[in-house]
Image (cartoon, rainbow, N blue to C red; front, side, top):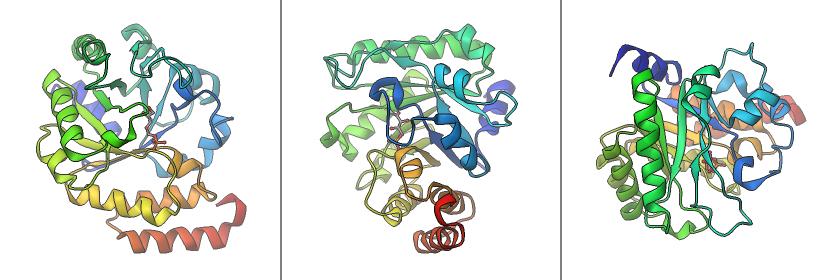
Amino acid sequence: MDWGKQNRWAQITKNGRCFFLAMDHGYFLGPTRRLEKPGEMVTPLLPYVDALFVTRGVLRASIDPNVKMPIILRVSGGSSVIGGDLSNETVTTSIDEVIRLNAAAVGLSVFVGSDYEFQTLSNLANLINACEPYGIPTMAVTAVGKELEKRDARYLALSCRIAAELGATAVKTYWCEDFHKVAENCPVPVVIAGGPKCDTILEVYEFVHDGMERGAVGVNLGRNVWQDEHPVAAARGLQALIHENLTPAQANDLYQTIKNEGGATA
Ligand code: 5RP
């Protein structure tokens, strides 16, 4: 990897592991519960995460430019949850904007097996071609749209491998049973996405731990952090699980301690 790209990747990881906080959901979901005021939501979580995954609109409107937090810019979009097909995406943000906003990396969705497979894979290839001359890492998001049943090892391994073959620096995908089949077949780092909110934070810690034991380098999680009743406790537990090797039970104990000490602000 070229020095600049390696340096940017190092800014968003620690010892090869990562906790990216996803807050890009409005780009297709519109107003999202607990993400109504992104700046207020994210401020107390900043000490625990390694980078923010965000669109340029929310970045400019809601994030203090003085904050020392690397940004992964969400650069695909063009569809909504009430539109015809979520997979009909384009690249929304130019390379000039990516550089102007001092992004450490960019992220873009691909929808393998959808009607827009060719379009979204072309988006990824074109984005990589635009980013590589500037040493900007690219994270391919293996999205499934509304077809959540696609989240099995066979499909996710296929999507991740194709994204890696096109040149993505890293791939974001969902956790699934037999996650090692996804990670082992992907020659670049794999990051776990969250999906809709789980019933308990322990479930989240368990799937993240299992995914990392099976080869993931970290997470790009959103709703399971900031839709939790105690987002600070949820984030601190994840940080400890990812970077301090706590078990899910230990991370859950830490969550409960912070929750009990901090009440509503934890
Ligand atoms: C939306 C995304 C999100 O960044 C990703 O799904 C992670 O967020 P969550 O944990 O809430 O699913 O790419 O398309």
